[in-house]
Length: 92
Length: 92
Image 1 (cartoon, rainbow over the protein chains, first blue to last red):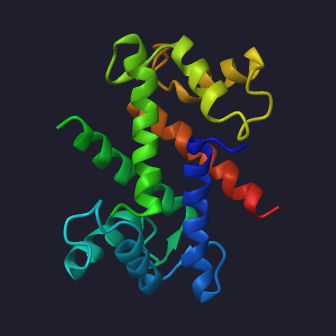
Image 2 (cartoon, rainbow over the protein chains, first blue to last red; image 1 turned 60 degrees about the vertical axis):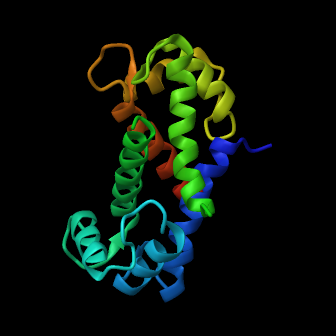
């Protein structure tokens, strides 16, 4: 049986594919899919997730090779960023 | 309401504190706690999680500053490593 922790790891991978495969790419998502992911999956973890400025700033931060796509490697950076925020919030 | 994705992010932070606070440290865990985390939380994600060699190799890989503790930053590396493995497995 999969533990809650393992389920969480698998959930992250599943969510990535949900949005990358949505526009037919197994390894990266475009701006539109990225917006949908953020608005749908993590509305509570970000301040103003529907604000275009928040989304643009986040994509800029995550999209390290500036190709306007979020690859799985860049997605790992997003996960890291969200975990750092959640960790800080847990100590407030 | 928290989404499944947000729950997964929070789960990762909770699991870290479960093992770091277990020996009284809010920001790092020792070798014993690290072993317990791996054996208890991710037995399915690693090959031979109870093999001391697997654990030692993993701690060595994760413990970038070689202080024999796993800090939250090093834990993020563990999460990344497990996600890369899970992502590769999803494409097999």
